[in-house]
Length: 256
Ligand code: COA
Image (cartoon, rainbow, N blue to C red; front, side):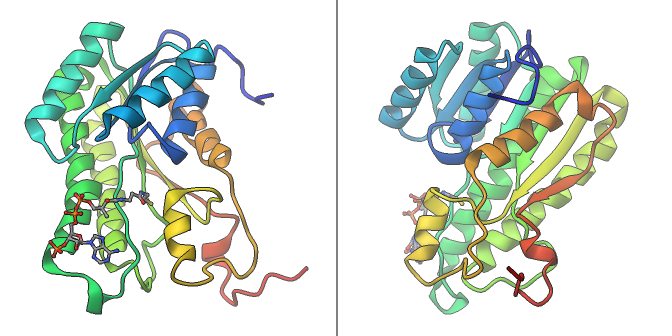
């Protein structure tokens, strides 16, 4: 049972990149359950087909698309396709991301570039195409899924921390430059979120959650839903950390 009104996003069309699995699929489900028509996309056809069928089975209007956020031409084609199929585009959630845990000693030139290309350039590509084709004239909402690494060095995450901190910077500049066009741009930075591929990969290299703080995919989806809604109508250029205070715990020893 959601604490948000079921018709919160009625009449809106939302595009969630990386919406076939994990946090992205939960965001798609949550926006869909609150009235939005949904477009989800990922690189893998079978993944996106299964997610689309699952969401459609829950009564959500859902379009499944395959493309790579690194491919500028494909991004433009996908935005055109969403507008043609769903009649518009109002919300863009840049969730698609790559990640592998590795120390700097073990990240190749191409490994670093790959993550920056997917996470940062990919976010730019989708945002830019949506802006030029729809949002520039009409307004809308962009939510970028970042990471809570902005102020810290993060072992195993040099590439991801650099890319995601770039995403937060991009969020702010888009928000400033587009404020006069009725476009709000914000970010959500998830902490340790249980049952996700990213956390599974981390657990393979060591215990990254020794205090047992666990968020859920729904926690992230709820923050995105709030930012997409009119309740956040004057919030732009912000990054909301959803990490159970993990990043502001100086001593890393929560009592209890
Ligand atoms: N350790 C070190 N380097 C790695 C690596 C790892 N675990 N996984 C990939 N790389 C390197 C590759 O070796 C390659 O570099 P090289 O050419 O110098 O060898 C580079 O990264 C690109 O790998 P490739 O497999 O060609 O790229 P891809 O476009 O298929 O994407 C990932 C690879 C890792 C980005 C992608 O598979 C991915 O992101 N998967 C996980 C998704 C995920 O966890 N999402 C949650 C985000 S929090």
